[in-house]
Image (cartoon, rainbow, N blue to C red; front, side, top):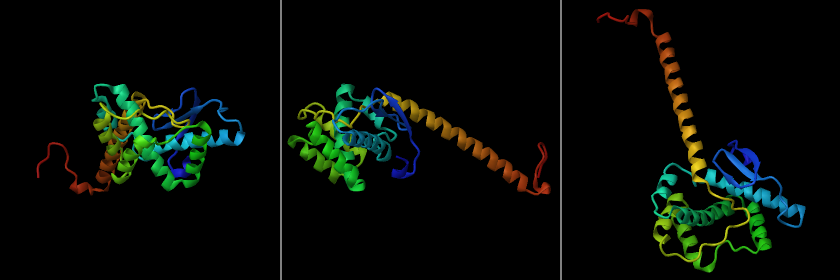
Length: 207
């Protein structure tokens, strides 16, 4: 995962597969497929898909707030997940073709279809739109009340937990604010230390 983009992400074994943008939560035990090699491909594909969410903007600022505005939030999240799977699949195919072949192989073994015929138009539209999360959100708004059956979840797709992501993002923002404040204080002290003593004004003095 570190080799993908240089950003260090934690790995943790749990029962439910997801990411909060700082940790990739992967299954304790993997015995979904018959061969050891395919089970390893499954873990690699799952880690790649969760990493892609953090790399290609699934959880950029504003996404959670937008999803919360829909009346049927559970269905909106389900639809968003399906659309993001199409969008991220295109990015992975372009940037990591070897892993993408593994993902296609796993889908064939599991009997899953990445994109049913009725969803091809949405996949093409996401590709034309520049491959941004905003394009997925726009389609959610358009399709929420009337869309073809949402595809079944793929074996490596995991789940989405916006509330857990929001907790991590807010904590990260507070850390960044604290870090910036500390940097500004240190910079101010360095400037004052470099200023000649004759140029420093004592409190209460006039020009």
